[in-house]
Length: 471
Ligand SMILES: NC(=O)N[C@@H](O)C(=O)O
Ligand SMILES: [Mn+2]
Ligand SMILES: [Mn+2]
Image 1: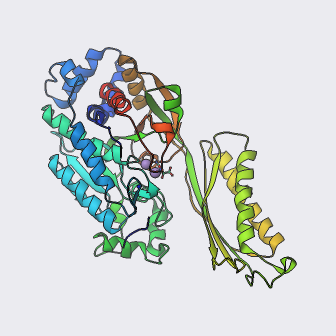
Image 2: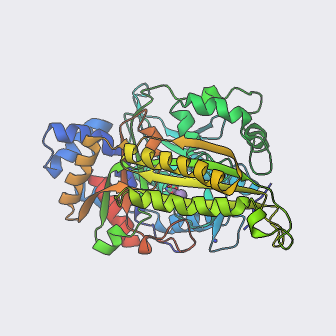
Image 3: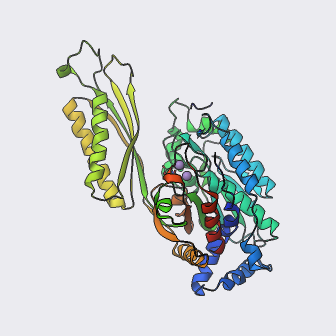
């Protein structure tokens, strides 16, 4: 099973960051309480945290990271793609995805982590702490990639975390709380139209547990069959074992490229995410009369394709009507059937992605889109055979103490910082339902993402690393 159809490097200094970003949440709680403006106090807490002498702060600050390894790993991982470089296409449960999973599991084992996988393929690499019963500090991201995208989205948060553990080990660090890296299954909605599939299940989405039993992809392959093809969900239809017990994690933090232009444009090094916008996605189907493109005169047509086109424009109109820059709407999929130049489309399928930091305002847009779909179907004499809201998620707020820790850290490092919203969604959106959550963004080239030109400079990544370091 494979997919149809994309380097730069330098995430190197990522290493320095991640060690800290794994620790950050724990730091933050205490720092805030003890008015944490003394660099020293950070190390005092670190010693308390690990129960081991931290040694020379400067040494800790200038931890050397395996930049070459990391760059090599990013390139090697990018090669597991169903489209040619520099693009990357890696869709859940395909041969390339399975091979990439094996690659990352080996890196986790190489970092001395005990690796386990759940029934849908969320992969966990745990560094067991001296007090294993304490809720762990978690981090992680995803490595699936939408068609023709780049090699940093999600990957930086996964490979960097593994290297961070390597750095901590090289430094002789021994955690008290366990540290766990989570590689989430299917953050991208490419194959089954559901975003953050793995993290939604970890966070206990009953709705998804049910709907997955009847979910199929465009080739009509069921979710469970696809999972079994990849080695998961072997002997069970019931995947409820995936749901994590509340309190499993003391905190969850994700490192990610900004995927927008703001940090780079403003020359700001660190983005401290305060909230993740609320995403929603809708599937719409129109059915019309179809017929011969030559013989059927315009007045006698019920063209499903034109209905879809009109609705796509209505999405833009309703989004702009919200009057807020924070409201966005995209029609990323529009398929016509039979898809022949000289045949009037008898069926049209479109998928709509709309988001906003204001859930109410976004839902207003969804309502208007629904009304327009009915109106257009009516006016054009076509049938609105499906209007399915696949997901309509609330926004997520970052944990205050984690945000403050990152603010303190950036100040210590004289790094410019910016509190900002994530307009992209992330697994953190769902991890926030079961754990205090935080995200840090680093600048990326022209804000490019979901395309092969995606890129982050080493300097930016290093700054991000240090910010985490102190946080
Ligand atoms: N981070 C990221 O790219 N998430 C996407 O799946 C999205 O569409 O936001
Ligand atoms: Mn993405
Ligand atoms: Mn991502």
